[in-house]
Structures are given as structure tokens and as C-alpha cells.
Image (cartoon, rainbow, N blue to C red; front, side, top):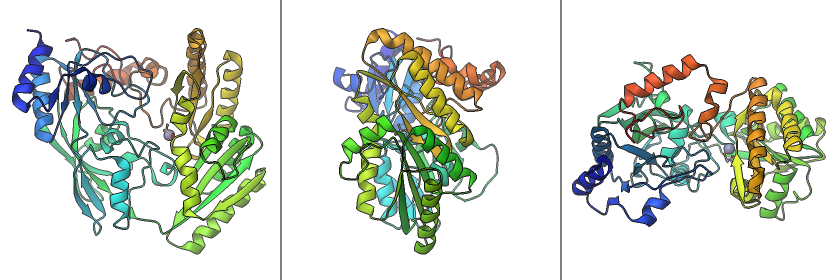
Length: 466
Ligand code: LAC
Ligand code: ZN
């Protein structure tokens, strides 16, 4: 019997057939994420119920040299959770209990399977705030957010997932359980292993519990929506805001195609026909101070050439806009047969240069490249849409040109979606051979047989057994 079959048999015996599913429907649903990354069918999907189940899977797979692909809700954009070689899927979505919500010390202890929006609601019901807001919050899990170090609009003021992690319990390949980090606000004992595990895209360990930091829920929020005639003017305004010392909690940019997509979803907000839009929000605990900050932001946008600026004080109106914004990625996806979504980042002063590069690349390659995203952070989602398979070489050239432009502007290839499989070939464009070799040694220290999420981030060559 092959090692993979032996692993499925051993796990079925240990955990039961209801936990270890081998039916085609379950296997196919767990084989891929929301990207175009190619996938193969896993031999089984193990729906772990707790850390013990995770440890059993990681021990068996390590002992038999079988590849195991951990996953949350599979909303990733780069194939990080995609099954790329024969093996098993380890599904953590059932480990979703909220074990502790401490409003006095400002922390929560939660399983990786909890859906991010459900966690945010539970926290906000207690007057507390967990700011990371990946736009897939309604579907994605905290485990996936931790694996990718997810960001979102509010990262501009509040930082990304990693900034809210105090401690992590995790299981290593081989089944060893480790408890990293702490429950205190500060702490520098030993290496910062939670920081390493967050963003490691499921290649080092499987997180089974997280201790997350919370803060007080802001009581005042005011939106500022600014229309511009062109994306170039909106990009210049982003720089003006940043250089002018404005720190709203988000500065989201949408180009003309994205504005049209947004207003199709949010009719009635008067956003039709915009050449570009900046969506900003100011928040805090002092309503007058927040109002004054929003007015300063609005004035800065007007001074930067906005055609129209409005303040959005009504939470229902703001939510209507965000509801449309949150489905932007999926709405763009529906505009073409294929879509790739990049998440490059440049220093914020180079946002106009990046937007100009995108315009040039799109024109040169004839690929539609709608662009939106977290411009205040310099992080833009450049999408590539195409319907004709013959356009694929042009899409590939456009991506290469985008990455070259990003790096030449002092940027980085991924701000929030990760490297996964789709960007792994480009890692050497940004990082030196020595740095990649060092990361391979880190990987080997956690996963000596290379069975955990092989082929991701560092590219092929980390797993030889299958
Ligand atoms: C967004 C996701 C795609 O910002 O990161 O919409
Ligand atoms: Zn994003």
C-alpha cells in the first residue's frame, strides 16, 4: 500500500469516517482557493475537531512522508491553500470556539476556524474592537487571516493581523504541540515565534488557538468620500493626505472601472460616473475631534482637486458603501472569464508612479487592469481580466511588468494575500538567493520532511516524497 493510502487508513481508524472524508464532493471543495491556481484532488479531507486531531494528522503525515495541506475557508487569492500534489487536506474550520473574551485586559482566545466577521461581532457586542478587516471577513476564518497576515482598509491606522496577535498555540509536523507568545501586552522573552508563524502561509505549523489583542471600540466614525476626474488625480491626493500628516483609519482608492462596479452594487449613493474615488474614514472616541479630522481630510481632498467631497455620517449609508466594496473582488471576477488579482505595495509617495505604470502596461499589453485598494498604505489590487485564452501570454507579460515596476519603485510583491503558489516563481525577483536559502533552513527546522503545505511560498523542492 502507498504511504498516502496508509495515511488515510490510519487516520480513518484513529478519527472515524465522519472526520476523514474521501468522497469526491468533499475532496473537490477542499482542493482549491479563490485563485486560478491549478489543483489536484486530495485523497481525503480531515475535518479536525480540536488540536488533538491536528496533532494526529501531522504525526501520521510526517511519519509516512505524506503531504498535508491545511486550510480555513479557502478565500485565498494566490493558491496558498490549494492542493498542488497528492496528499491530504487538513480543514481547521470546525475549531472555532471563542474560549475567552476579556474586556478588562483586552484580549480574546479563539480557535482558527472562527469566521472573522463573527469574531468581530462578538467582540463589538462587548464594546471592544478587533480592527483587522479583510474584505472577505464574512467568509474567511481567523486561521486564514493568521496564515497570510491579512490586512484590510483599516490597516492604515491599526496595522495588520500580526499587530493584534499576542500568542499562538500550534502543532508542528510530527505532532508536537507548542505554545508561543504570551497573554501580556508586552513581552520579549525568546524569539518572536508568533510573528514568524503569522504570515507563514501554513508552511511551518498549524495554528490551533490564538490569543488576540483587542482595543476599545471607537464610538465616533465619519466617512469622507471624494470623487476625482481621474485616477491620477486621486493618486496625487493620496500622497497629499499622507505628506500632510492626515491619518484617517483608511484611504481606499477606486479607479473608474472599479467605481462603476461599486456603484452597480450600491446604487443610490450617487457614485455613478466617477473617474476615481477615494473612500476615507476617521474614527475615535471624541465625536468633535473626529468631525474636525474628517473636515480636514475633506479639505485636503478638495485642495488636491476633488470634483466633489461628501461626509458620510450615517452608519447605514457607510455600510451600504462598504457592503459594495467588500464584494469588489468577486464583482470584478464576474466581469470576465478569468481574473488574477495582485496586491503589490509601494511607498505611498510612489502610488502615482505605480498607477501610471499600470496604465502603461495595460495599454501596451491590451489587458484590462482595473485597480483599487488600500492606497493609503501604498497597497493596490491590480486586477487582470481576460476572456480569451490566447490573451494569457500578454497577461503573464503584464504581471511581470507590474512586478518589475513595483520593485523598481522600492515596493514589495505582496501586501496582504501572500505568495502561495502563484507568486512563488517571482520570489527571487525580490529576495536574494541567500535569504531564500535561510528561509528554507527555517522551514526545515519546523518541517524536516517537507510535508506541510509543500511547494508554497518558497517554491518547489521542499517536499520530495510525492
Ligand atoms: C480586497 C481584497 C481582495 O481588498 O484584499 O478587496
Ligand atoms: Zn485588500
